Image 1 (cartoon, rainbow, N blue to C red):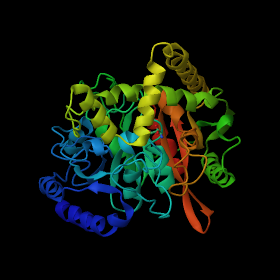
Image 2 (image 1 turned 90 degrees about the horizontal axis):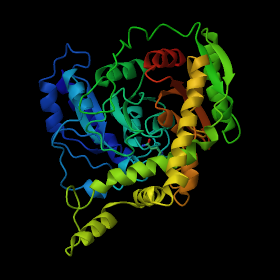
Image 3 (image 1 turned 135 degrees about the horizontal axis):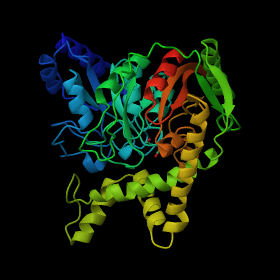
Image 4 (image 1 turned 45 degrees about the vertical axis):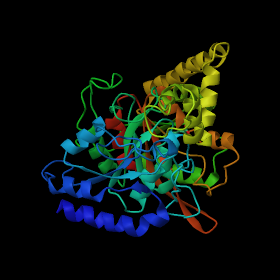
Length: 450
Ligand code: GLN
């Protein structure tokens, strides 16, 4: 029964989570209650799904990996993705660790504990949805939800050897997702297989009047075309994604997948995305700018932490000083700087213009090819602590994932085997990028790449 499944999963979580750190909390009573009422005839009937801790589930904590929301905040409502999962019979089960407010690529920025890579306990699981990816990889979840602003679903999926799908901007409602950078954020599934990713996307996709950026476009039947193969499809290899800086072993693994797709009948062509080199700079202006605005709601009055007993300004200052971690403060500083008068045109406006050029690169490419193939990350998962004094190095590692968010297109990470490093076998992912609302083709290619 669904209750048995919840109990089995809970027992595995209890046994393995202390060392893995994927789950921040688990309300077993709520999950059992939900399971006892699950309609097993529905598409996701009785399936427990783990939730990143920045997506609201009624009555559950929603910490965003931050001290700010650690004590005392309980979600007063379900995010739209959660109501849709429930409507398909799924059971929201457990809250998954993440970089604070989804800022990071390693889950080391969580203020609430560390998550390790299930394949190598001294290494990062990736981030910011590190808990969501590690839980699936370790068998502590069947599927999870993550959020992807610049790679936070695809990158941890790649490092943990699982499937991670970032839908097109507007495909999935963001209502009930705690906003990081609103023009980039999307919710998506992390799963063991492409088929499971298609099933979860099917459940959560579609228009929502409560998110003005969600698109009123029909949702295709993703499972119906999943096995159609890649014969006759044209797949592009962007030369900018295979150049210097990518680890040789990673390139070899990715190219093996490219060969697999070619043997399955796809035509492989080289393409160019000439503005790729500007993606990191553009993203790290736009994302902090939007974050500095979105995070102004954490003022010590409305949610979570309240510090300071003097005047209002002191409450704001002390609450934010105490509640936010170093990376979040760094982003707020960067964001307010690029939005301040005098710098707005030089940084923020210019970044928006480059963003348009990046989007056009993809529009041109998709005039020629059906999907784009690349690595997800230039290297396999690094050791925990390695970049702690070097935020710039950490930002640079996002080079292959950021552009998809800037352009609003869809992307997926599919396991591409492992590389050996220091006696460890570390997973690598193949990234497939598809045109805006092109999830049907994206999933088809991904399925053929499994
Ligand atoms: N690593 C990127 C950042 O730190 C992307 C994070 C994300 O997608 N949420 O902003």
